[in-house]
Image 1 (cartoon, rainbow, N blue to C red):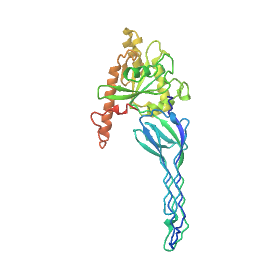
Image 2 (image 1 turned 90 degrees about the horizontal axis):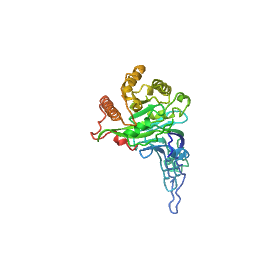
Image 3 (image 1 turned 120 degrees about the vertical axis):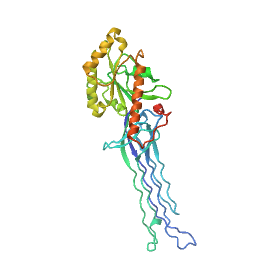
Image 4 (image 1 turned 180 degrees about the horizontal axis):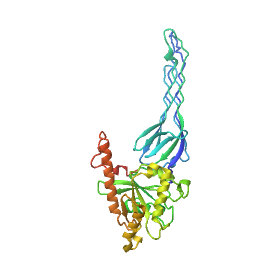
Length: 362
């Protein structure tokens, strides 16, 4: 299935049905009077988050959605039928914007969550509503109001606890294959990964988290070089970033320090807040460095970068150091969750046996 993470659609809610002008005229009933019924309400359009979906590809070609109009009122005080609501299923993690104004309308981050995208028109009133002691044969009626119509931009931001960041061929896909059941394509050429991949990392029977692997960045990505920075939006919801760096002598650039600087520069151009997010340095492909040179190689890179945060040296291909890294990530995520719960005392704590496992189908 093709991965699509941004589309523009048009939604048009149904119009309300007009009220009816009618009079009761039957044999042997001399004073019939008005009996025009109200119209029906127009159908509204909702967006609903569906955990079974992981792409917006269904809306790449079908971009216009219309809800049903309300029926007109009828005689004999019959009310017109209301139009049926239309529910559009989107992946969990979809942000909904007004395409014309750029306003954020809503953010669907939980399965089953619904968002009113376009409200249906209100029903019109029949002439029965206008009868009175002084207006016994009213011919007034009220037409239904039109439903809302708007252009929406749907932007999918995958929901993950941890995001992998780095240059092409830094080993991000290899790492997610090593620690989860995800099986992204792995090859020795740049831009093997063309769309984000999610994997559930299990750290013990009741502890797990979701990791996201996005396509690598290169210098000039903010100006559109390589695959650009279009996929960085998928790191927006992550709590922690793992910055993977190829430290082998055979890396494309041969300079891990320069690679880190390039990534940080492109990240800052895209989103200053994302550039300030907690980020750990993960020095990968250690198996390609001679054993007697590994410690010196790691120390040199950390010193030149003046890195103050956590540092891990691993070999994703050989699964060396990956278990320690995942344990540390799990502990940090739990620490963050406890801090968030403490900061929001009114928020109920999750049950003991519930973890981010609940999102493994995302």
